[in-house]
Image (cartoon, rainbow, N blue to C red):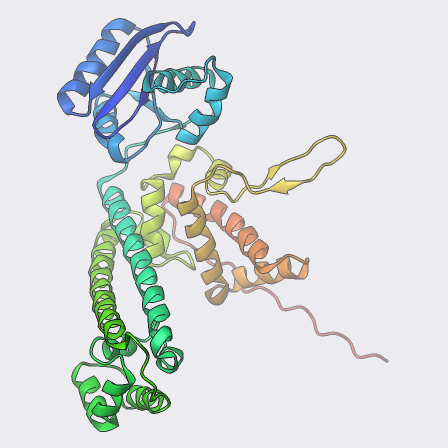
Length: 402
Protein backbone atom coordinates (compact mmCIF):
# COMPACT_ATOMS: atom_id res chain seq x y z
CA UNK A 1 0.00 0.00 0.00
CA UNK A 2 1.13 3.54 -0.80
CA UNK A 3 -0.06 6.53 1.21
CA UNK A 4 0.25 10.06 -0.12
CA UNK A 5 -0.09 12.99 2.26
CA UNK A 6 -0.79 16.54 1.12
CA UNK A 7 0.64 18.33 4.15
CA UNK A 8 -0.64 21.57 5.63
CA UNK A 9 -0.25 23.68 8.76
CA UNK A 10 -3.50 22.79 10.50
CA UNK A 11 -4.62 19.67 8.65
CA UNK A 12 -3.24 17.05 6.26
CA UNK A 13 -5.10 15.01 3.68
CA UNK A 14 -4.05 11.37 3.31
CA UNK A 15 -4.96 9.00 0.47
CA UNK A 16 -3.99 5.32 0.45
CA UNK A 17 -3.94 3.19 -2.72
CA UNK A 18 -3.11 -0.43 -3.44
CA UNK A 19 -0.90 -1.96 -6.14
CA UNK A 20 -3.64 -1.43 -8.76
CA UNK A 21 -4.05 2.24 -7.88
CA UNK A 22 -7.42 1.63 -6.23
CA UNK A 23 -8.17 4.14 -3.49
CA UNK A 24 -8.54 2.45 -0.11
CA UNK A 25 -8.65 5.45 2.18
CA UNK A 26 -9.12 9.20 1.87
CA UNK A 27 -9.11 11.19 5.07
CA UNK A 28 -8.54 14.71 6.36
CA UNK A 29 -6.41 14.55 9.50
CA UNK A 30 -5.67 17.20 12.12
CA UNK A 31 -2.02 18.05 12.62
CA UNK A 32 -1.77 16.68 16.16
CA UNK A 33 -0.13 13.55 17.54
CA UNK A 34 -3.29 11.65 18.50
CA UNK A 35 -4.90 12.07 15.07
CA UNK A 36 -1.69 11.16 13.24
CA UNK A 37 -1.13 8.03 15.34
CA UNK A 38 -4.72 7.00 14.65
CA UNK A 39 -4.11 7.48 10.91
CA UNK A 40 -1.00 5.28 10.98
CA UNK A 41 -2.87 2.58 12.90
CA UNK A 42 -5.81 2.70 10.48
CA UNK A 43 -3.53 2.36 7.46
CA UNK A 44 -1.76 -0.55 9.15
CA UNK A 45 -5.06 -2.37 9.69
CA UNK A 46 -6.11 -1.83 6.07
CA UNK A 47 -2.76 -3.05 4.75
CA UNK A 48 -2.83 -6.07 7.10
CA UNK A 49 0.61 -7.68 6.77
CA UNK A 50 1.48 -5.82 3.58
CA UNK A 51 4.24 -3.25 3.28
CA UNK A 52 3.22 0.40 3.56
CA UNK A 53 5.12 3.21 1.83
CA UNK A 54 4.43 6.82 2.77
CA UNK A 55 5.10 9.90 0.65
CA UNK A 56 4.78 13.58 1.56
CA UNK A 57 5.20 16.84 -0.35
CA UNK A 58 6.93 18.65 2.53
CA UNK A 59 10.02 17.59 4.46
CA UNK A 60 9.86 20.25 7.18
CA UNK A 61 7.57 22.97 8.52
CA UNK A 62 3.97 21.83 8.88
CA UNK A 63 4.92 18.23 8.12
CA UNK A 64 7.53 18.00 10.91
CA UNK A 65 5.21 16.34 13.46
CA UNK A 66 3.84 13.92 10.84
CA UNK A 67 7.36 12.88 9.84
CA UNK A 68 8.39 12.47 13.46
CA UNK A 69 5.42 10.16 14.10
CA UNK A 70 6.06 8.09 10.95
CA UNK A 71 9.80 7.72 11.53
CA UNK A 72 9.27 6.93 15.20
CA UNK A 73 6.96 4.10 14.13
CA UNK A 74 9.58 2.78 11.70
CA UNK A 75 7.60 3.63 8.56
CA UNK A 76 9.28 4.13 5.17
CA UNK A 77 8.79 7.71 4.03
CA UNK A 78 9.71 9.35 0.72
CA UNK A 79 9.78 13.02 -0.18
CA UNK A 80 8.12 14.24 -3.39
CA UNK A 81 8.63 18.01 -3.91
CA UNK A 82 5.51 20.06 -4.49
CA UNK A 83 6.87 21.19 -7.86
CA UNK A 84 7.01 17.56 -9.00
CA UNK A 85 3.43 17.03 -7.87
CA UNK A 86 2.34 20.17 -9.73
CA UNK A 87 3.87 19.00 -13.02
CA UNK A 88 2.62 15.43 -12.57
CA UNK A 89 -0.95 16.66 -12.06
CA UNK A 90 -1.18 17.48 -15.77
CA UNK A 91 -1.06 13.76 -16.58
CA UNK A 92 -4.16 12.99 -14.47
CA UNK A 93 -7.77 13.43 -15.47
CA UNK A 94 -9.55 16.67 -14.66
CA UNK A 95 -8.44 20.26 -14.21
CA UNK A 96 -9.66 20.62 -10.64
CA UNK A 97 -7.30 20.90 -7.70
CA UNK A 98 -8.15 19.63 -4.24
CA UNK A 99 -6.13 18.35 -1.31
CA UNK A 100 -7.57 14.87 -1.89
CA UNK A 101 -6.47 14.89 -5.54
CA UNK A 102 -2.99 16.09 -4.66
CA UNK A 103 -2.65 13.38 -2.00
CA UNK A 104 -3.78 10.74 -4.52
CA UNK A 105 -1.20 11.99 -7.05
CA UNK A 106 1.53 11.84 -4.37
CA UNK A 107 0.57 8.25 -3.53
CA UNK A 108 0.47 7.22 -7.19
CA UNK A 109 3.84 8.83 -7.90
CA UNK A 110 5.34 6.97 -4.95
CA UNK A 111 3.88 3.74 -6.36
CA UNK A 112 5.40 4.22 -9.82
CA UNK A 113 8.70 6.02 -9.28
CA UNK A 114 12.01 4.48 -8.22
CA UNK A 115 14.12 7.64 -7.98
CA UNK A 116 12.64 9.16 -4.84
CA UNK A 117 14.86 10.19 -1.96
CA UNK A 118 13.95 8.63 1.41
CA UNK A 119 13.49 10.97 4.34
CA UNK A 120 16.12 10.29 6.96
CA UNK A 121 16.27 10.87 10.69
CA UNK A 122 18.74 13.65 11.40
CA UNK A 123 20.84 13.40 14.52
CA UNK A 124 20.08 15.89 17.29
CA UNK A 125 23.08 18.15 16.69
CA UNK A 126 22.48 18.31 12.92
CA UNK A 127 18.84 19.23 13.53
CA UNK A 128 19.91 22.02 15.88
CA UNK A 129 22.48 23.25 13.37
CA UNK A 130 19.81 23.32 10.64
CA UNK A 131 17.70 25.65 12.79
CA UNK A 132 20.62 27.86 13.79
CA UNK A 133 22.09 28.18 10.29
CA UNK A 134 18.66 29.06 8.90
CA UNK A 135 18.32 31.68 11.62
CA UNK A 136 21.73 33.10 10.71
CA UNK A 137 20.75 33.26 7.03
CA UNK A 138 17.60 35.20 7.95
CA UNK A 139 19.65 37.63 10.04
CA UNK A 140 22.15 38.14 7.23
CA UNK A 141 19.40 38.85 4.72
CA UNK A 142 17.69 41.24 7.12
CA UNK A 143 21.01 43.04 7.67
CA UNK A 144 21.63 43.35 3.93
CA UNK A 145 18.13 44.72 3.31
CA UNK A 146 18.48 47.25 6.14
CA UNK A 147 21.90 48.44 4.94
CA UNK A 148 20.60 48.88 1.40
CA UNK A 149 17.67 50.96 2.64
CA UNK A 150 19.93 53.01 4.90
CA UNK A 151 22.38 53.79 2.10
CA UNK A 152 19.58 54.72 -0.30
CA UNK A 153 18.04 57.12 2.22
CA UNK A 154 21.40 58.58 3.32
CA UNK A 155 22.43 59.24 -0.29
CA UNK A 156 19.17 61.14 -0.87
CA UNK A 157 20.03 63.93 1.62
CA UNK A 158 23.75 63.49 2.52
CA UNK A 159 25.46 61.80 -0.48
CA UNK A 160 28.98 62.86 0.55
CA UNK A 161 28.77 60.86 3.80
CA UNK A 162 27.27 57.84 2.02
CA UNK A 163 30.18 57.83 -0.44
CA UNK A 164 32.74 58.26 2.32
CA UNK A 165 31.62 55.58 4.78
CA UNK A 166 32.00 51.85 4.19
CA UNK A 167 28.70 51.09 5.86
CA UNK A 168 28.58 47.40 4.90
CA UNK A 169 31.94 46.39 6.38
CA UNK A 170 33.09 48.99 8.92
CA UNK A 171 31.46 48.71 12.33
CA UNK A 172 32.53 52.24 13.26
CA UNK A 173 30.44 53.67 10.42
CA UNK A 174 27.31 52.12 11.90
CA UNK A 175 28.25 53.39 15.37
CA UNK A 176 28.64 56.90 13.95
CA UNK A 177 25.22 56.83 12.25
CA UNK A 178 23.41 55.88 15.45
CA UNK A 179 24.04 59.43 16.74
CA UNK A 180 25.17 61.67 13.85
CA UNK A 181 23.55 61.49 10.42
CA UNK A 182 23.28 65.11 9.16
CA UNK A 183 25.85 67.70 7.99
CA UNK A 184 24.68 70.23 10.59
CA UNK A 185 25.05 67.83 13.49
CA UNK A 186 28.53 66.71 12.45
CA UNK A 187 29.79 70.28 11.96
CA UNK A 188 28.49 71.30 15.39
CA UNK A 189 30.25 68.31 16.93
CA UNK A 190 33.67 69.08 15.43
CA UNK A 191 36.48 66.61 14.79
CA UNK A 192 37.96 66.51 18.31
CA UNK A 193 34.69 65.90 20.15
CA UNK A 194 33.51 63.43 17.48
CA UNK A 195 36.76 61.47 17.78
CA UNK A 196 36.39 61.36 21.57
CA UNK A 197 32.78 60.14 21.24
CA UNK A 198 33.78 57.43 18.76
CA UNK A 199 36.59 56.25 21.06
CA UNK A 200 34.17 56.10 23.98
CA UNK A 201 31.84 53.93 21.89
CA UNK A 202 34.75 51.64 20.88
CA UNK A 203 34.88 52.51 17.19
CA UNK A 204 38.03 51.34 15.41
CA UNK A 205 40.25 54.07 13.89
CA UNK A 206 38.22 56.80 15.59
CA UNK A 207 40.47 59.64 14.43
CA UNK A 208 40.38 58.68 10.74
CA UNK A 209 36.63 58.01 10.80
CA UNK A 210 35.94 61.33 12.53
CA UNK A 211 37.99 63.26 9.98
CA UNK A 212 36.23 61.58 7.05
CA UNK A 213 32.81 62.40 8.50
CA UNK A 214 33.72 66.05 9.24
CA UNK A 215 35.16 66.51 5.75
CA UNK A 216 31.94 65.19 4.25
CA UNK A 217 29.87 67.53 6.45
CA UNK A 218 31.97 70.56 5.45
CA UNK A 219 31.38 69.79 1.77
CA UNK A 220 27.59 70.23 2.09
CA UNK A 221 25.87 73.30 3.53
CA UNK A 222 22.57 73.11 1.64
CA UNK A 223 19.75 71.66 3.72
CA UNK A 224 17.62 69.06 1.92
CA UNK A 225 13.87 69.00 2.62
CA UNK A 226 12.94 66.27 5.10
CA UNK A 227 16.50 65.98 6.36
CA UNK A 228 15.60 65.66 10.06
CA UNK A 229 13.08 62.87 9.50
CA UNK A 230 15.49 61.08 7.19
CA UNK A 231 18.28 61.37 9.77
CA UNK A 232 16.06 59.95 12.52
CA UNK A 233 15.15 57.01 10.27
CA UNK A 234 18.83 56.38 9.45
CA UNK A 235 19.59 56.36 13.19
CA UNK A 236 16.88 53.75 13.82
CA UNK A 237 18.18 51.56 11.02
CA UNK A 238 21.74 51.90 12.35
CA UNK A 239 20.57 50.76 15.79
CA UNK A 240 18.77 47.85 14.14
CA UNK A 241 21.93 46.84 12.27
CA UNK A 242 23.90 46.83 15.53
CA UNK A 243 21.21 44.65 17.08
CA UNK A 244 21.44 42.24 14.15
CA UNK A 245 25.23 42.12 14.51
CA UNK A 246 24.88 41.17 18.18
CA UNK A 247 22.30 38.53 17.29
CA UNK A 248 24.57 37.04 14.62
CA UNK A 249 27.51 36.95 17.00
CA UNK A 250 25.39 35.04 19.52
CA UNK A 251 24.13 32.63 16.86
CA UNK A 252 27.70 32.09 15.63
CA UNK A 253 28.77 31.13 19.15
CA UNK A 254 25.88 28.67 19.43
CA UNK A 255 26.71 27.18 16.03
CA UNK A 256 30.38 26.74 16.94
CA UNK A 257 29.55 25.14 20.29
CA UNK A 258 27.21 22.58 18.74
CA UNK A 259 29.40 21.92 15.72
CA UNK A 260 32.38 21.11 17.94
CA UNK A 261 30.28 18.45 19.70
CA UNK A 262 29.45 16.58 16.49
CA UNK A 263 31.37 13.37 15.84
CA UNK A 264 32.21 14.46 12.26
CA UNK A 265 33.44 17.96 13.14
CA UNK A 266 37.15 17.10 13.13
CA UNK A 267 36.83 15.24 9.82
CA UNK A 268 35.05 18.13 8.11
CA UNK A 269 37.37 20.83 9.43
CA UNK A 270 40.44 18.88 8.35
CA UNK A 271 39.47 19.48 4.72
CA UNK A 272 40.80 22.78 3.32
CA UNK A 273 38.07 25.37 2.80
CA UNK A 274 35.81 24.19 5.63
CA UNK A 275 35.42 26.12 8.84
CA UNK A 276 32.82 26.19 11.56
CA UNK A 277 30.03 27.86 9.57
CA UNK A 278 30.40 25.92 6.32
CA UNK A 279 30.88 22.71 8.29
CA UNK A 280 27.68 23.40 10.21
CA UNK A 281 25.79 24.04 6.96
CA UNK A 282 27.12 20.76 5.56
CA UNK A 283 25.88 18.84 8.61
CA UNK A 284 22.53 20.65 8.43
CA UNK A 285 22.12 19.73 4.75
CA UNK A 286 23.18 16.08 5.09
CA UNK A 287 21.72 15.33 8.49
CA UNK A 288 25.15 14.24 9.71
CA UNK A 289 25.16 11.04 7.65
CA UNK A 290 26.19 10.77 3.99
CA UNK A 291 25.41 7.04 3.77
CA UNK A 292 21.81 7.88 2.92
CA UNK A 293 23.00 9.07 -0.52
CA UNK A 294 24.37 5.63 -1.32
CA UNK A 295 27.36 6.60 -3.47
CA UNK A 296 29.70 9.53 -3.97
CA UNK A 297 28.18 10.12 -7.41
CA UNK A 298 24.70 10.35 -5.90
CA UNK A 299 26.00 12.78 -3.28
CA UNK A 300 27.46 14.98 -6.04
CA UNK A 301 24.22 14.77 -8.03
CA UNK A 302 22.09 15.88 -5.08
CA UNK A 303 24.50 18.79 -4.55
CA UNK A 304 24.07 19.87 -8.18
CA UNK A 305 27.72 19.18 -9.03
CA UNK A 306 27.13 16.40 -11.56
CA UNK A 307 26.15 17.80 -15.01
CA UNK A 308 23.34 16.09 -16.90
CA UNK A 309 23.14 15.65 -20.68
CA UNK A 310 20.50 17.40 -22.75
CA UNK A 311 21.02 15.77 -26.12
CA UNK A 312 18.57 15.68 -28.99
CA UNK A 313 18.99 14.24 -32.44
CA UNK A 314 22.46 14.89 -33.77
CA UNK A 315 23.25 17.26 -30.89
CA UNK A 316 25.32 15.44 -28.27
CA UNK A 317 27.68 16.32 -25.47
CA UNK A 318 25.35 19.13 -24.33
CA UNK A 319 25.83 19.18 -20.54
CA UNK A 320 23.90 21.38 -18.11
CA UNK A 321 23.43 21.73 -14.37
CA UNK A 322 20.49 19.60 -13.14
CA UNK A 323 17.26 21.36 -12.34
CA UNK A 324 16.69 19.45 -9.12
CA UNK A 325 19.41 19.74 -6.51
CA UNK A 326 19.99 20.85 -2.93
CA UNK A 327 20.95 24.53 -3.13
CA UNK A 328 22.35 24.55 0.39
CA UNK A 329 24.69 21.68 -0.46
CA UNK A 330 25.77 23.39 -3.68
CA UNK A 331 26.48 26.65 -1.86
CA UNK A 332 28.54 24.83 0.77
CA UNK A 333 30.52 22.89 -1.83
CA UNK A 334 31.14 25.97 -4.00
CA UNK A 335 32.25 28.29 -1.20
CA UNK A 336 34.51 25.70 0.41
CA UNK A 337 36.13 24.96 -2.97
CA UNK A 338 36.67 28.67 -3.61
CA UNK A 339 38.28 29.13 -0.18
CA UNK A 340 40.48 26.07 -0.64
CA UNK A 341 42.17 27.66 -3.66
CA UNK A 342 43.88 30.11 -1.30
CA UNK A 343 45.03 27.57 1.31
CA UNK A 344 45.52 24.25 -0.50
CA UNK A 345 48.23 23.76 -3.13
CA UNK A 346 46.43 20.77 -4.68
CA UNK A 347 43.23 22.78 -5.13
CA UNK A 348 45.16 25.68 -6.63
CA UNK A 349 46.90 23.46 -9.16
CA UNK A 350 43.60 21.83 -10.21
CA UNK A 351 41.87 25.23 -10.48
CA UNK A 352 44.71 26.66 -12.57
CA UNK A 353 44.60 23.64 -14.89
CA UNK A 354 40.88 24.14 -15.51
CA UNK A 355 41.43 27.84 -16.17
CA UNK A 356 44.19 26.96 -18.63
CA UNK A 357 41.69 24.71 -20.42
CA UNK A 358 39.55 27.79 -21.11
CA UNK A 359 36.97 27.47 -18.32
CA UNK A 360 35.62 30.56 -16.63
CA UNK A 361 36.20 31.12 -12.91
CA UNK A 362 32.78 29.77 -11.91
CA UNK A 363 33.18 26.68 -14.09
CA UNK A 364 36.65 25.98 -12.70
CA UNK A 365 35.44 26.29 -9.10
CA UNK A 366 32.50 23.97 -9.80
CA UNK A 367 34.83 21.42 -11.38
CA UNK A 368 37.02 21.62 -8.27
CA UNK A 369 33.98 21.27 -6.01
CA UNK A 370 32.95 18.14 -7.93
CA UNK A 371 36.40 16.64 -7.44
CA UNK A 372 36.41 17.53 -3.75
CA UNK A 373 32.96 16.00 -3.21
CA UNK A 374 34.41 12.53 -3.86
CA UNK A 375 37.13 13.13 -1.29
CA UNK A 376 34.69 14.54 1.26
CA UNK A 377 32.35 11.59 0.73
CA UNK A 378 35.14 9.09 1.42
CA UNK A 379 36.34 11.03 4.48
CA UNK A 380 32.87 11.11 6.06
CA UNK A 381 32.23 7.46 5.19
CA UNK A 382 35.52 6.25 6.70
CA UNK A 383 35.87 8.86 9.50
CA UNK A 384 39.26 9.74 8.02
CA UNK A 385 40.99 13.11 8.32
CA UNK A 386 42.16 14.89 5.20
CA UNK A 387 45.76 14.17 4.30
CA UNK A 388 47.34 16.39 1.66
CA UNK A 389 49.34 14.66 -1.04
CA UNK A 390 52.91 15.49 -2.00
CA UNK A 391 53.63 19.03 -3.07
CA UNK A 392 52.63 19.46 -6.73
CA UNK A 393 55.71 19.61 -8.89
CA UNK A 394 56.39 22.89 -10.64
CA UNK A 395 56.62 22.82 -14.44
CA UNK A 396 60.25 22.87 -15.66
CA UNK A 397 61.51 26.29 -16.79
CA UNK A 398 61.42 26.95 -20.51
CA UNK A 399 64.73 26.45 -22.29
CA UNK A 400 66.40 29.50 -23.69
CA UNK A 401 66.59 29.62 -27.46
CA UNK A 402 69.95 28.57 -28.85
